[in-house]
Image 1 (spheres, rainbow, N blue to C red):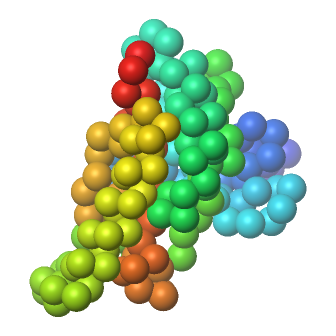
Image 2: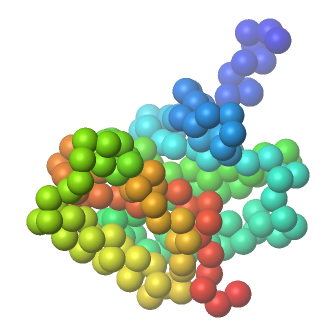
Length: 166
């Protein structure tokens, strides 16, 4: 591959520059990237179209529109959803912090922190449900705990969100 071809390969949707891989080879590709328009860090989730059921990309677009309407503080904001004919992609803001899974490696949460986290996640899920959206993959690895603490945790991984009706 020539050096001239490299930048085009690393550009998604005409504006998202892909950087380092965030997952292992057994999972759908998740890459850290940068929005070329705003220079902000983003997370790009990539899935080969051949691995998706028919109509899945259109469903993702519909659900991303619903997620954008949500503007819930407990959700990582969605920037874009699309495909290039080979790969489907979803881009959301990068949330500084570490996953709840990693956070829990140091032991169980004190009750007061667990309650703060529970309130945050339940309020976020309630907001999604009010828009007829269901996350379907709430687990410790899909909750990012920012440096400010558990009370500001953010839910990520929207690949399994679906409309509750339809």
